[in-house]
Length: 325
Ligand SMILES: Nc1nc2c(ncn2[C@@H]2O[C@H](COP(=O)(O)OP(=O)(O)O)[C@@H](O)[C@H]2O)c(=O)[nH]1
Ligand SMILES: [Mg+2]
Image 1 (cartoon, protein in one colour):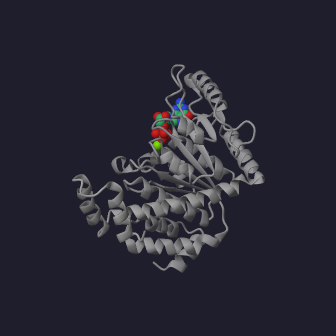
Image 2 (cartoon, helix red, strand yellow):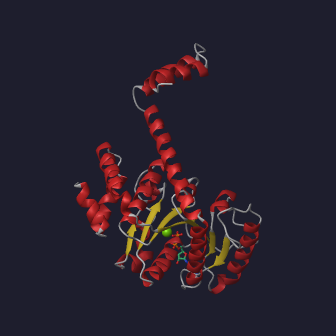
Image 3 (cartoon, helix red, strand yellow):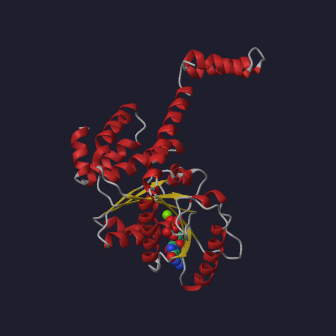
């Protein structure tokens, strides 16, 4: 791959070049990693900035339907939209978006939309890096909005929140009066809670659920990056295309406020630092899993097991021999 040429094509918004570049960053091969790093470096001065929106919700809440409706709403406003998925379970399910293309039929035919299914890769750290780099590529390609979808499993929301400017949690109307077992952690990173399916028979339940979550959000610690009234809970119907304009208005109001208050840039700076540190952590961990450290680790671990060495002395020896300290 000719890196300067590919970079030019991406900057010119060529979708095929973008798709191939994403395939490159998704690759685990060492030579591909080097090319990917060179490409991202070439593109880093593009000065283009998309609004990155993380979207999470358990299977069945309507993420795909919402992305279709919301995505078409945005392209209807003349905005270019990219959709990416972070799904650590995709090895089994075959890609969360891929299986769902039928629900995004209109958007996938839209010339101003680009949809990319999640890579098949089981390691969350790896998935996160690939997704983050794919976001950077879409940004350089001139997309105005990048939607990053994730299913609500474990750490993936946290990872997505670390690469998004806004985090949207999609929920379904609750049957009873319980809050649907949404983990506190995910409530704490949400900027906007959208209770979907607020239509037909489900509308009263959606309205109640929204009120419950609005109450729960008020109990959370106030975050410096929020103006009054945020995080906010609203109802939408992705199927009937209701509340979408309102949701977008709230997203832009929040983003504008954060830009003016300096939170937008400082958050991105903190995220860049986070990913740098995460990358260093991952590199160190992968060295531990490779020879010669892998074997030395095993040998020392046996000595620790049999009492020939103490855990700390063995650790110090390993660090001194292989990691210079
Ligand atoms: N009534 C209603 N059903 C919806 C709405 N959005 C999605 N659904 C339905 O919920 C089911 C799951 O939707 P899907 O978008 O595949 O959810 P995902 O698994 O989160 O991607 C489908 O049968 C959709 O038609 C909505 O706004 N109202
Ligand atoms: Mg889906």
